[in-house]
Length: 291
Ligand code: PXG
Image (cartoon, rainbow, N blue to C red; front, top):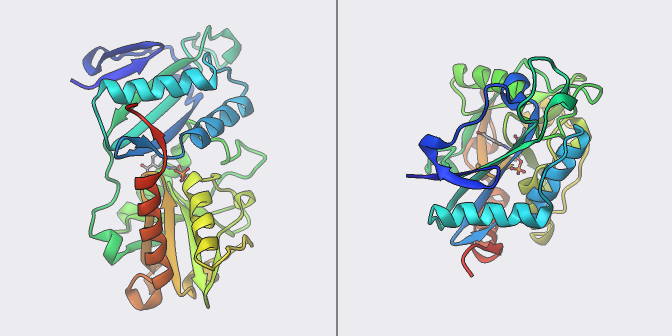
């Protein structure tokens, strides 16, 4: 039986329960991280933990553990499930409160850690590539809750994902209020044009993806230092290569966008080099789980 971490205890999945008064459930009031581990090592753990604390600070939420304790809890949860490869979902909710919005009436934030497996896209898609469509649901403007906060409010993304799936695509491109490309529903976007790499700036309305940062480093090492201009759908339609990055998706090629073939319908060379370099990095670096 899988073991789930809830507020300091590791309990059986069937006993892992939170209050119906938890504001994470009532209002989507909380923050989260999705973290991968490979061959007994957690990939980019500190960066995920840093981003979680930043998300929490932005929504005025106090995480009841310090970073070292939280890292210890993540590792202990993976160990309790005896996993070598998998995915961690780390959530901090506002905690149980009243039926009103007021978060200051919630006593203490709840920390939940699930260590499990994830396979977002079929294995053959990493060779064949994905198809994307533009979603009509926009990324919220920075004056609303900024998409930089990895919050439990994912309904914009869920609405867009519904559009993508009902259009027969695996992922959807989300634009910002001005119509510039921001990101996909759960992944960041990169394009290659004439050997040059581009990705939308975080200020376009995207999450500051950790895989995005890794891909930018890898592109630099591969001799294609990425620029971060505002991008339009035109830039994507006319790209030589297109790929997505995300913790769960890793680096995955896109070969069709709004029914236009990208790169003649096959993944490009730079994309494939990035996938290989990413694969190698995930298998050779990271925080050891079992000392
Ligand atoms: N953009 C958004 C909106 C995300 O939610 C990423 C980009 C990639 O960020 P990282 O740091 O992982 O490189 C994410 C993360 C899913 C799913 O089921 C995706 C995420 C989180 C939880 C579930 O597709 N994405």
